Length: 104
Image 1 (cartoon, helix red, strand yellow):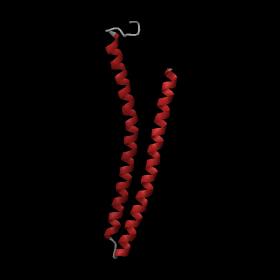
Image 2: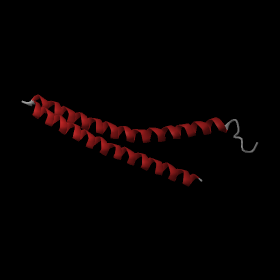
Image 3: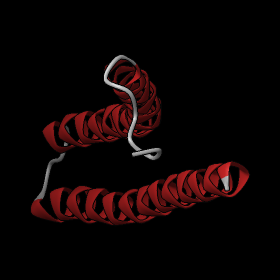
Image 4: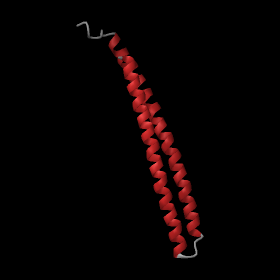
């Protein structure tokens, strides 16, 4: 029974662990959230610009050119964003692994 926590310390240890884990989860989640909100704002701005440009087109060729540019920009932006998100995941994974190594 040595490895069993006492009935008085166990709830407190669990609460401390849960609080620490929740704080870490929110911190990591907020980095993702901030990055995604920045990206969404960026894309919304570019989409708004494209709609404005479409309103000024005088021919189908002009409209097709605006649409093609918008698609090309979107693909480039989404590709760059996925790279950023992957980098955040790799960093957080490395940080978590480093934390486990320090505890053991």
